[in-house]
Structure formats: C-alpha cells, structure tokens
Amino acid sequence: MTSPALSRRHWKLALRFTLMLSFAAVAWTANAQGKGQVPDVLRFGMSKSLFRDVNDNDAAAALSVYAKTYADQYEMAVKMFILDGADAITRAMQNDAFDMMALSTDEFLQFAGKGLEGPLIMSVVNQSVTEVYLLLVRKDGAIKGLQDLRGRSLIVSSDLRAALAPIWLDVLSQQHGFDSPQQVFGKISFASKPTQVVLPVFFGKSDACIVTRNAWDVMGELNPQVKTQLRVIAESPPVVPGLGAFRRGISPAFKEKLLRSTEASNERLSFRQIMALFKTTGVREEPVSALDSTRELVNAYEHLTIRGRRKTPNMARGSDWVSAVGRQNH
Image (cartoon, rainbow, N blue to C red; front, side, top):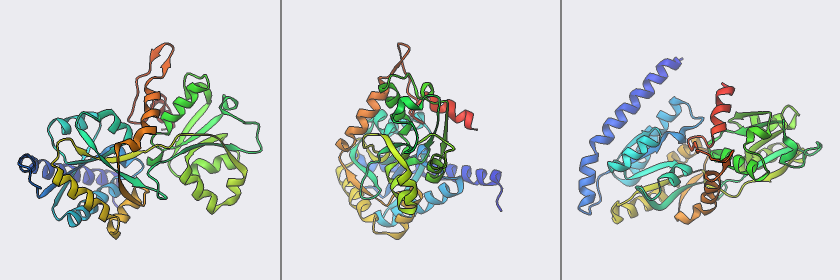
C-alpha cells in the first residue's frame, strides 16, 4: 500500500509537471489567439476548491483522464493545472494564462468582470444545474423553526455540491435575528457523506442537519423511513455551486469550438466517469443570468453586519465561523 507521504509527493510532482507543461504552452497559445486563430492547445485551469473531499490520488488520476478526454474530444493538446486560492486565480487572469477555468461560483462572482466571461459551463444533477439546501429536524420533536435550535447541535454537509450552504446558514441566521450561526447552535460539525449528515438526526444523536435536496431525495428512495420521520424547516433558494468560465478576450471561434465539444463530451463514458467523481451526471451551457439567485444570496451574505461592523467574507469556505468550526472538528 502506498504511504500517505508518498502519495502526497506523487501528487505534488504531478502538479509541478502539469504546471510546467501548461505554462510552456502559454506564449504560443496567446499569440495564436491574438491573430484570431484557433490554437492547438487548450489551457484549462481548475480551482483547488473543486477538489473538496477528493483525495490526492483520485484528484491526480482525474486530472490525467480529464486531460486525455478533453484532448480526444477537442482534437488538440490539453494542458491542465491547479489554481490554489484567489492569488493564483488573479495571476492567471493577469497573465492570460488560461482559456477555460473551472471554479466555485463564489470565486467566479468574486472575479466576474476582472478576466472571466460567459457563457458558462455548469454541472448537472437530476437534469438541474442548481442545488437547494434543506435544514432538517425530526418530526416528533419540539423544533419548529431556527429559533428553537438555540444551543442545539447541527451537522452541515461538506460535499462540493453544498459549498454555499455555510453562506446560506449565515444569511438565514441573520434573518432570524442572530448575529451568526454560532449564536444559534451549541455545536456545529461537518460531514461529507449524506448518511453521516442525516442519520445522526434520524437516530436522535444530532438535533438538525443541512443537506442538499438531491442527496435528501436519494436517501428517501433508499430508506423511506428516514424521509417520513424527518421534516424540512427551512430551505435555500436554488444556487449553483460551481461552474466553468472562459478567459475574457478568448477568440470567438475558439470559444465556439470549446462549447460544442464540451456539449458532446457528455456522450463519452470516460467523461461521465470523471463527472461521477465530482458527483454530477454531465455538463451544459448556461447564460450568466443562471446565477441570478446565487448572486442574490452571496450579495446578502456580503452585506451582513456583526456588531455594527461589515463582515469580511471568507469565500474559500463560506464564512468566518466555518474556519473556526473546521479547526475545532480537527
């Protein structure tokens, strides 16, 4: 069995090699697009935020297969690289070092108008590009609303599709007169698997949980008893957790080729296997306006105030309290 340390070394070496190949292609590709040509190299950046709850080996394997699948589909070389944090994304935009970028929606909204443009490529689950977050409690208890959860325990899904759940919980808490979720709940923890989020509430070991509607529906199909004994006391607006965008200024011909090829990728088995790693069933093109309800939620979060001071968003994980809870959980 490969040791964790060795796996990390292989992962870092793979990233360095990928980065080296990627930036070697930058100068030629930018020059070709400057002349209005369709280049032979696609530079595809992926935010590290998309690899939440994906181990290093799976992520490295996914990148390798992802690049090969795209190369076959686009009939061009594909250079993929990881962008670790806002500074890396900013540098990539400043240097025109990418053609397409996959990132979380809150990251896109942070950088929209600064180097990214649509149309957008969004992942699909159950024929929808959006997720709805549900706050669940037991039906037979005394909890009727958020105010009844004061001092109680909460489990929040840390799945990639639930990336905006902490932001929604912040807004929901504020709407009910609380400064933050920490003022509501006595204990907040995170879990990645739907069963780890929902079943503790079902068995009375936790008072409430937040999970995506899609995950909730699947659990209800597998175990109808769970769905009959738990109920929803709050739900979020539809939100888009992640997306793909284009570099502003990319040639129209190149963009059109990528859009058509991306749409056709859904029919490829290898592409569907990659999508399964990210818990989606495919991708499709959507206008920037598809983010309207997500933008409203993020804007509401950004305007929250605590003790008369403007909250400083931590968009990497959603909220300041999330980082604190994350440290407690570890």
